[in-house]
Amino acid sequence: MAHILGNITGAFRKNAPLEVLTHPNPLLYQKCEEIDIAHDEDLPSLVKGLVQAMRTFDGVGLAASQAGILKRVLIYDISESQDEPQVLINPVITDHSEELSTADEGCLSFPNIYFPVTRPSRVTVKAYDVAGEPILLEDIEGLLARVVQHECDHLDGVMIVDRAKPHIRKTALRTYATYEYQPEEYITIVDAQTFEAEISPGAIAHGANGETIIFAHDEAIDE
Ligand code: NI
Image: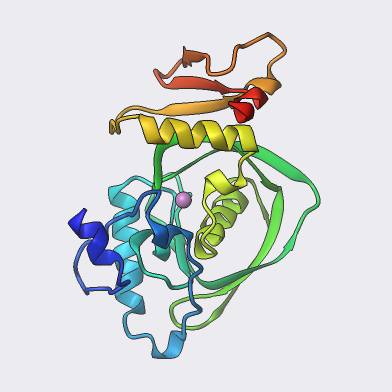
């Protein structure tokens, strides 16, 4: 617990490896502040630390708030080689499609549990780089759109459980609270409604890749 409490201040020590906070740490649920890019001397080392942490924990994206730093900066890397980190400072989603898409998402702050999250299929994002130069991601789609929306959510204190359907959210939170973290173990929560076959709520199965599958059902809400 000591390292988590230490981060509560939001203080950032240069060269110290960043920790990734996990639910239910309250910092994950707070709104981050805009960065004054020209005057923020810690910014380059913060970005460096975030990239390092993203690689250590094998993520495709990371927001500063996940490291306990409540500043509007996020990084992502969806390249195959995992060596093309991109940074967005003060990002704003300026436009989004009416069309939605649903896909399983996971989060380093809600480790090893995956579940469906619905988001706009395409978005346009305006941001800045570390030099203060504007960045425009116009009408991005697919994994890139999903990752950027996920990380922008972090900057507003919104976690993936907040984006899930209520019965998925409830099953995810209950699973998280009761399961003992194993680095190599993955749990996927599936919406039982998407299956024609009758699957009893809370049924557990094993996936092709060894992951545990838990079927969430609407009735779980009334328990
Ligand atoms: Ni996340």
